[in-house]
Image (cartoon, rainbow over all chains, first blue to last red; front, side, top):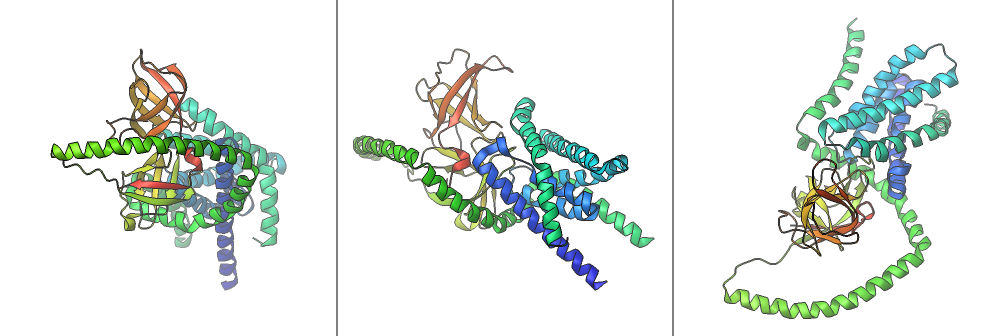
Length: 169
Length: 259
């Protein structure tokens, strides 16, 4: 029992550390390339842990990622936290529908859907609290983010898999 | 049974809490947020440091050209300043004669940028000065070349600055050449939009935009940016123009907070 608890705590620490690393990477990419090369690495983290470790660790990743992003953001506190947590739950429902499909296809489909759902959810939350120019938001924020994230997700998942094996998460 | 229910209760709570945060008073989280920022901004700064140094070396020629341009500008400004100092002294003497009691000194707090908002939806930076140094919400933040933004959240040792190009930012402004007045707001494109200009407004690409005396937090005459395009507004029978901020808000490293 104690050993199991230790493993869980270790996993939580590793997820928190990976969240910080991903957030740092996002910040650095944003500093140099602004919105044009701004992948949503943190949603990939939530999706990855949801697929490989289940909802419990996906929620840990969602909370870490959400708190980090909300703290640095100029928007309302809780906006990203809510979107990541909601995506983690939505993915559980989506997994049930895609159960039985070929693994690679279902992974790609699920990841693509979740990336788009997260981007749309953030857009809707931003629009409900602030005046957002929908056309501007789509061209300069949502589309670049979705496209870049879709392009790199398999590479990130591979790196995360290696990392998970190394730290036996 | 209870254990199973407890588990579902925790899952439900994880979803409800963020929603409650969204509905609650946001100022309550300022210290918590800025605490997280302070503890996590160090790795970003450490990684960025060598990259920034590398950038300086790679863009050496651009930096040298900029140095030469600024040096010439400084020489020109020095001569202009000496003339203006004379006018200022004369003005002070005349004001004294008229018994003006106006405080002309502006107290400034120098601060370093320690973190940036990478979301793209908002433009904000976090600076290393907070309520301990006298920073208050709503204070104006300026840079060496013009206005940067305003303080929106204050922690004990750090504060959040909403930048000039944030969609939520607005400041009264005028075109320096023609004195046409309008309102500068941020956009999601990284540039600013000047709205509510009269349809007959005399505006040209390249015109400088400065703060107007109608602005309640910024002093009059501070540079904001340069007009890059002029167009008719889609929502009202007015003109609007896009303005490129003088100081690239995402690249700033140091700021001055006006007390």
